[in-house]
Length: 250
Ligand code: BTN
Image (tube, rainbow, N blue to C red; front, side, top):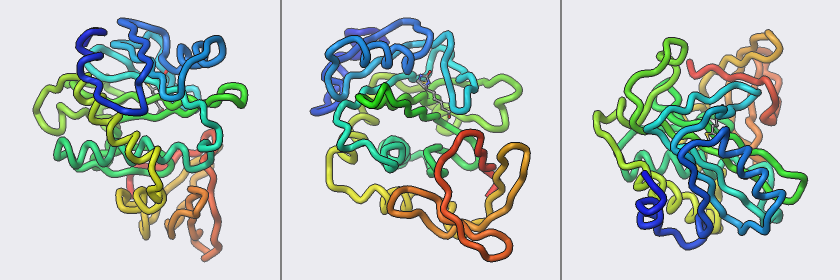
């Protein structure tokens, strides 16, 4: 991928009208924050890197960022559209893209993981910038064939699932088309999310602050909160929160 091949691959109408391309950067989310704070960037501006030296995941975890995958962040400026449902859009768009364009059986895990079976194929990190923009950062494992030992049972890639290699900029364009169609339309994102998840009715195991809890998933609220019933039948509604980990074993 280079800037020229990227520019010719992108065929979107709303997103990626402004493109910042890096061979290498610390983190595209960090770059996006700096750009959103310091410049007159447009809604939908995208920051893409071939590799990241300090890719960031949720809860302060590092995000493994070798060559061959896709790392990007998009700046959203229209704060009227930023609400608790915001993180669901990229997850659903990616699951749709993997299923419809690549025949890979992806499903979403609340709040915004995208899995193949029990393994993660992508990660999403949404971060606000001083109340005036929102960053959606995504890493999609595309051509990675081998993962470090600690990730082998929990991570996968498009190549591992399909035994094909992909042009990174083509995958990016396919994702962006799905994402803008969903995000800038009147689609009921909650309904779309429900269509792409296996969680409803399943018993999940969550861990937070070392405390393990089992619960049955009943649904998702209009705000995008996970509705669960605990073992005594008490109902709760969970917001995505720091340190909350839900096992993929459901
Ligand atoms: C997760 O832990 O699941 C979220 C991972 C998010 C990784 C992406 S890669 C592009 C963007 N830049 C970052 O530093 N992080 C996000």
